[in-house]
Structure formats: C-alpha cells, structure tokens
Amino acid sequence: MAFGINFYSGIDVQNSNRVRKLALEGHEIVYVPCHRSHIDYLLLSYVLYHQGLVPPHIAAGINLNFWPIGRMFRSWGAFFIRRTFKGNRLYSAIFREYLSELFHRGYSVEYFIEGGRSRTGRLLAPKTGMMSMTLQALQHSQTRPISIVPVYVGYEHVLEVDTYAKELRGAAKEKENAGLVLRVIKKLRNLGQGFVNFGEPITLSNYLSQHFPDWKEQNHEEKPTMVYTCGK
Image (cartoon, rainbow, N blue to C red; front, side):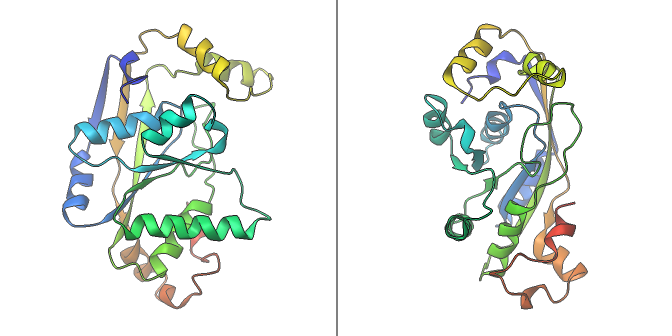
C-alpha cells in the first residue's frame, strides 16, 4: 500500500482523534474525502492503518479495473462501481444491498461524493447516489449508528498535474490503462508533502431526527428526499 505514498516526503495528519472516538463508540464510519488524485485511494487507507484504525472498503470507478491496478486496488479493499446506475434497476438494487451488507457486518466505507477528480483544486458539485444508498441502509434496519466523516486530502504537488494541465488546455481525457500508469511512474519525483484533515463527523440518525423528523417513515426503496440536503 505504500506504493505511490513513498514519493511524498511526509504526510501531515490532523484530527484523527475524531475517527478514533467514533470507532471506540461503535459507529459505522463513512469517509467522504475530496478527490484530487488517484493517490487518494491509497493515502487515506495508509493514514488510517498507521493510526491503528481499520482501513475502509473503497468505492472506486470501474475505469480503474484494469491490469495490474484493478487487482492491486482489490487487495487494498476497493470495489468497483459504474459511473451511473441509470437505466439499470437490477444493478442498483444489488449494489444497494451490497452496501447495506457492508454496514451490517461492521465495515467502514469510503467514497468520493464528487464522483471524479477535480482538475482545478476546487470542489465539484456532489453526486448524491452513494449518499442516497447510505441513507437507505440506515433506514433498512440498521442498528449501529452511521457517521459521515468529511476528509480533506491535499498535496503540495499532485501526481497527475501534467495530465490535468493538458486537459484544461482542451486535450481529451485519456482512458486509464497500464501504459498511462507506466508513463506517470517514469516521471515520478519527490512530490513534497501530503495532507489529511478529518472533519467534524455527522451522525446521520441525529442529523435526520433534527432536520427531518419523519425520516424513518419514508419508503427506503425510494430515493430519500433528504439526500439533496445531506449531500450539500
């Protein structure tokens, strides 16, 4: 898992005690980091492991499921999902049950609510699909509290900066593949420091009871109406 992390001279970690407190209190934890780089997938798990916390299962885009990255990511806890579930109710239903089962078994989960990497450093508008399924899992006989932990992830130098610069100048995004990975590795150098800051956790049941008192009465098979507020 240290692959890729070794190119950073150090990692500045802030407020990990917030996550440790949730773990000790028996919360199911959902990490929601901002998305700057493919290194994000590795960095948070690396930090949690070295903080003595269990790394999460990570929702990764299916575009990363290619040799050898797909196998490596799976060994580190990733599972691959499609960019959109629209038009495929069966896929959506199966994945919703899979996510609910992860929570039921006590696993923490990580997903990127922006849906993709930011090329400019600014936050992208949130995609509400995974948040919606998290709320549905809570409604569907979830006994342990689920807490959302926003996470800032940043770098002095982003690994894909050259690629981003080309895309911002109008070049088409190149599909991820083994050749692209090798070209990036050849250009690797000391990338400075990485930064991870754990934000204030949001315990969903408390938040929903305060802002949506009837949330337990909603049909958990339908997209929760409060997801649009929770995703902001």
